Length: 488
Ligand SMILES: [Zn+2]
Image (cartoon, rainbow, N blue to C red; front, side):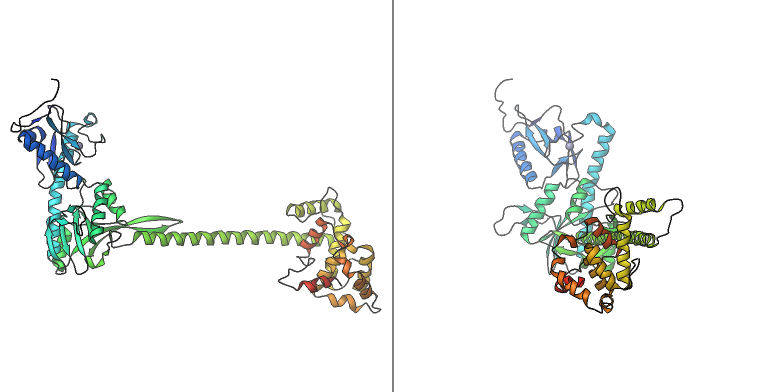
């Protein structure tokens, strides 16, 4: 047949011969219809009107007919030859009725059975909800299926499963079903937020290890709290004379250094439910806040661990350095020491390598043992307040010696005398005052003339072995004006 097919408005509507969706279910009554028989029960003009009505209901999230197999809302479509059939609202090819090759007849029958059961569950939960709310005097205007018109000129209307009112809130209760899709959840949230009312999703059943996608939409959209109304909670409500539900919520806990979830199932009175209309979240336990707190706690603990590890590492390094310092000082102060079979110079090479490894050794392949020994004697003389290892009787004599033979050691010597508190000893033997005069004369050159400067590696060596005493004090510890005078 070519061209337009015109059908007498009063003729019986006809269905396509092999419809993909062969059965649909009424979500309110739970009745399942054979699609071909359903379509043929309408006159053509009525079928066209039905088509428009179903489409409008689907758009308003109030679909009455769903695919009996996959429970997705359906609407009526019409072929070019004016034959009717049903289409899924979300035609994403996931319906087993369309991809039936992967499922056995028995599987499809089982799915349809579950869908039909769900309609029963819906009716049951709604009745239980009405029973539970009616017993509690704090709830007024408790009503099923009451049309809720948008106020203040906003478009749309909703028909919550049960509506009610307390002194503080207008409430809409919706029973969550597998037909409740994410966009439905979101659009209803938006509607009731604008209305200044709280939307409470109620599940017929929940278990954390058996969650449908739609359960998760509700759960995660509600700060990880879900509510269940069943025979048990209705009985509890009636016994207590107050509205009681079961709340399942995730509770974050710290295990080791990570956060894991525990599930808590608890019967709760309505007083325990914190209603937040702006966020459209009605919760018993604030998962997000607790998780954020625990994350901070973990972070603090982690920083503490890092700091402790750094401290320990620093302490271990300090201990290694102290040990090496003692070893080097002992070796250089003991002139006759031959370490076992190793000749003295070879022992020195080994020690210098250890020093070099941490940045305090002499550079070059032939580090001078005599220079090292002299520096150590200088340190010990300053520490003792009398010559150690030098052939002089007093620090004053040592001072003259340094001025003439080792001017590069003068500054370090001065800093150490000051640091070790032995500066008086320098002048107590300077009876003629000559040393003081000489030092006074060179004082201004000490910081400028390169001859008063140690080689960089020797300076580091000296600073390490003297524990930093050979260096000018930091400004915050000492007045810089005085420290340059320390050498004098
Ligand atoms: Zn389907």
